[in-house]
Length: 327
Image (cartoon, rainbow, N blue to C red; front, side, top):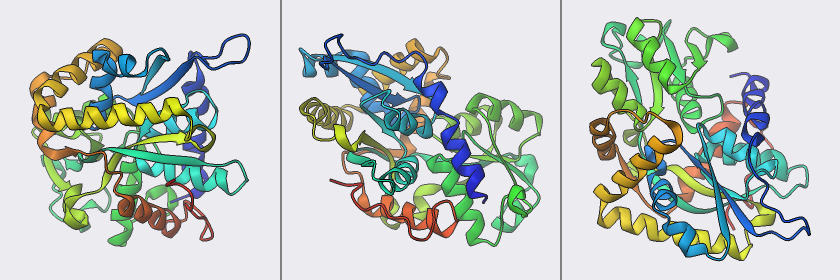
């Protein structure tokens, strides 16, 4: 993996993430709003449901909650670093990389404050690909939704464990970054052999194209538990009382999703339909729920392991540290 390419993919999200986001500050400089980011994936369902239902807004009154939906974790963390949002849910890998980069320059880094989900990511392959084992990935074309996502790191780590590398780094597996919708189209046409995807995209590919779930990522982790979505804030926002209230509100949403998952899916699906237009078939959304768990535990051991993997792959220098990422 080329570290420059990886970091460029992260940094390239800055302008897009910042565009159109109200900064939430009054003319006298006082902060009256909490700017919240959330991703357009099922793994972020508790926060999506809380925002869409209005429960989070009511829990934080009189603070005004402004929210923005992002399509990938690196966009969320870049928006945090660029002070375009105050707090948001992201995959843990972008938080690890951005924290290590920015804290090493004395800029405080990021803080992971709570969990949102575990699991909910898979490597899916088309039936025509002929992939039956890791060695069969040699010469294939695989995709992720963006360079620098948690699934991107998972894919590259898996390839490295089987002595495989991205073609861009001199290996013989082609790895590209395109949107979930493009992945669906290119796997259907045969341009792609597979993709490492979060839910509900992995399940959509399986159900819409008859693809195979080659790896359920839960099977690669001890106890089948690993952080997929976590609540992250910039270090200088982490102790803000408004952020603390959001942490509590998200914990309530996770508890609600555990008690009544159908209602959370209803509300999350409706919010995505309102915000991004086409969240896919509702039946696929429901089926994807079986491949993840909601949890307010950020599963620290799995996040720390991502730091080890990022250093091993050369994405972060060997001296990089994620100390301070957890308060």
